[in-house]
Image: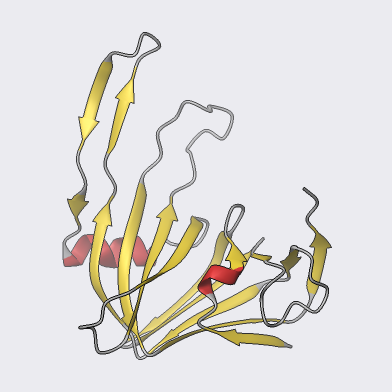
Length: 166
């Protein structure tokens, strides 16, 4: 078993997909696949970027400070603005629906946030919904960010998978 705490910047989330979600009043646990362990992670003794097996990411003593549906600008082939959708803060009901439907979504990142006034550690979690039609590379998909405040974030996995070349 491999475990590390708070090393959110020692992973690459490029291909990371959420396969299971567990939540309670002050805990959120995500099980993800295709999380890449960076060479400088404290648990990487091979010193090469490699995929971890299914990984549990657990945020303890946490609450969601803010959640936002990310906006976007969509341009046609001539560079003309077609639509402009600003960022929008989610309502409590929308956030509950988002969390309930996280399985199958992509986790595109977790970043630490420096906030000297915060009582606990803060992280921004990036979520992207999968396209309805995976063959359509032009399809706009919804993405979200959640600002989480927690005591700790723990990563744990059983084994390493393939090394990542390049």
